[in-house]
Image 1 (spheres, rainbow, N blue to C red):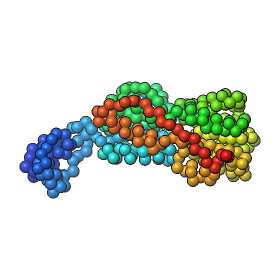
Image 2: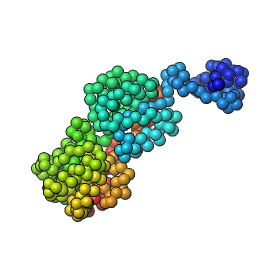
Image 3: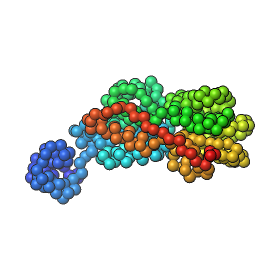
Length: 333
């Protein structure tokens, strides 16, 4: 039978309120009394009931995390950044996978809110009216990763996707390339799709290169789609000098398709991705890419969320982190 707080109080010769103060470090307790209580807890092997504590103290020390695809390398690195901060601060995580379904995302957000988590970290590629309706109803703080939205208790952590895509495309255009293609994400995805495509278009305009719709393909954020589109590019003989891909995973797939067709990278075509997941360094050829500070995005999302959970104030609610162009073997010179 589980040991109760009453038994701990009797063993230590103190009140239940004093035991509670020691457990929660809520009010001052003399060192001698604290020692007696801690000794009683150890002797009796007392384990506080986390559910009961969350109901009494309105805190569960648990953060819900909703991600698009836990198998995605970007997501794995992001979760590492979240974990490093959350566990260090004494918070547990409930990680939920939406598999890219907006309806599933809303369902998971509601489920976590009902489970009395203290806050939620939400990674998504688009915000629908259903998401926004949830934000308005929810009373707990939420950290949004890779999207931006103003609202009560909403934190936003992202990079400037448009500027990053502009910089990567401009790298190719400065070489006087005129046939620079792109594999974009779905335009419905505001930042990973629309904003990155707009950065590509702005670079073409800035360098006086006419936009050619046939050089732009649309895919999902995975290697299989990258491979499929890479085969299309070869079969259609688009004569690309360079290809900018909206995420590293699609870039890996496209490069494999090119290599399988006998093309040399970067001799016949140069390729760049977006994210700088760990595999980018070890793939052959190593991938030139836009580096997002993924670990820092996760740690910022968790750190700022915990500040709100603990009643602290924030200097700012939106953080736009810097990106970096990382040049590797998949581009020449």
